[in-house]
Length: 218
Image (cartoon, rainbow, N blue to C red; front, side, top):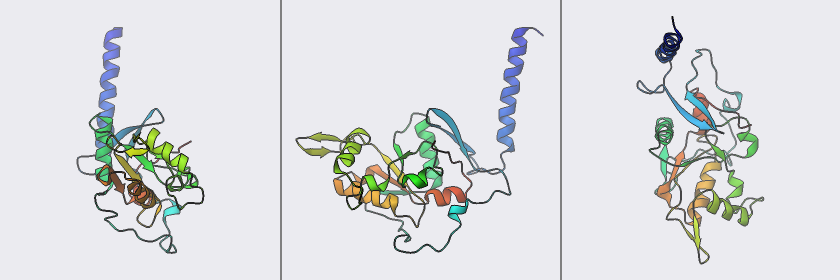
């Protein structure tokens, strides 16, 4: 076998291996969706459900009794105009973004101690404390910098211009978590268009429950 035939043979084996791996995936997201590949810190990450039938939910998400307030169950409709989405919708948005068909910023609204335990691939950490004026660590300069540098907001004669503001997808720890709702309410109070905001209500609670891929931010 010459070098060219050897290379072609290896390539075919690689394709066959990928096809076999796809066929062996017993735990898919939907019948037609097995995985989604995104970029995280410059590296490709495949988001899929854990294939181990003995896998169990992470310890942090096994509690069922969390004192309310602050851990109160959040409504489905957070604010008029804000889009509430689930896992399939988020994964399809991530897939469309990877294909160049969509553009948005995926925001983990949790405090850094939670974020460092693991997050959804491609998410950036913008804690609720940086945008909410009621937070003890709130700095209006930091909040304005985020709006201008990260969210695509412009400023004209001292007023915010949201016409080119980015589409945002925010999440936190789950239906009992108020961190992303606080971020969303703060953004809308600044004048951010509600229809450019998407809220993944299930957050890390449901992400872990479904065995979906997480990444270590470090």
